[in-house]
Image (cartoon, rainbow, N blue to C red; front, side):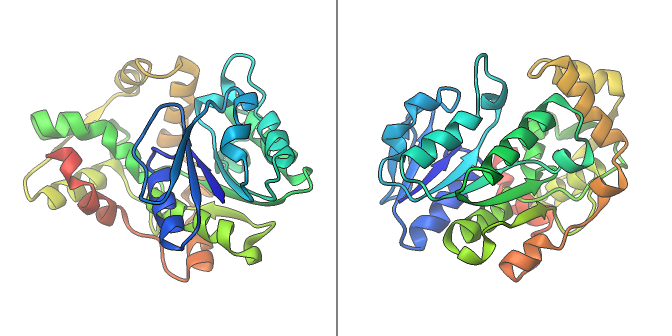
Length: 279
């Protein structure tokens, strides 16, 4: 049995599909009831409350651990999840971390994630760590404006990073869960090339077969929009990365090719597969 947390998200869904197609039993974990692939079971649990996890972990030998807000929930101690997994008989954990633990290690989120990485390394369990950069699926932030106004509004229109397709993250995660050769592996995951917001808008337009206008926001305008859904500190942090990526954040990693034996998918492929969200 393999447990997948974040099962309803852009990584969890293709990961569950890959594991069930490989003939593995899968338990999907999310905060709310959700549809899962045929053959998988679903358990409602909250990662911010590790004591709620034993029913989900019962009988499991491997765990894909994806944390989002759970990392900073009031009173949360994500390291306890590793302890619950070990106590339940889990022997392998694949942790979704972030490239930021290397490129910008001083931020609050990256400090907490580095602590969790270290806890996993010292746990005695088999482990792999995935460190993706920016996600292609962040373009879904523009879906409403594309549908309503045929416009993508974003800051730093001609500054890009090598964003990765979440389906490629899922494919690497599946390989790490299924293949002992990846035990102890730390993989930096990026797309095949740097892509700017303006180029993303062009790829969405090509997928739609209709024009999409790019409107460049100022940093202040972008921050005002972002703080509607995230703390101001995190918005500033994100804008720092988008506006002034470091050489390490611009680097195209070979790790997807190394694990999967193929190049990572370009943003245009993601846009074509997800075009319905923009119609």
